[in-house]
Image (tube, rainbow, N blue to C red; front, side):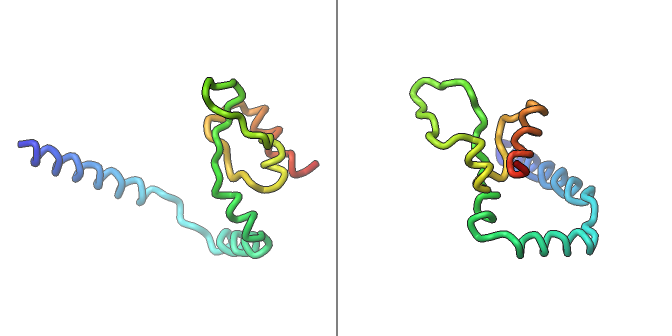
Length: 101
């Protein structure tokens, strides 16, 4: 009985994932060309930096050491792709514009 429930659960999950994959907008050739051109301009360090997703937490957490490098410095040096738990639109906009300074 448990085995049947597991099989049915996995089947439903698979069907849901197939539905999500089908609803994605197709990529236009111009988009692919723009992405390729941008990737050619980026250094390996910048590409690796885009893979980083640090937690954006300003409050001190007991027992957790704070990072000696500020969020702003990490953004400025291309070491952040996105922040987790950052939801304030004004703060998001401020961080996005750091590289423009």
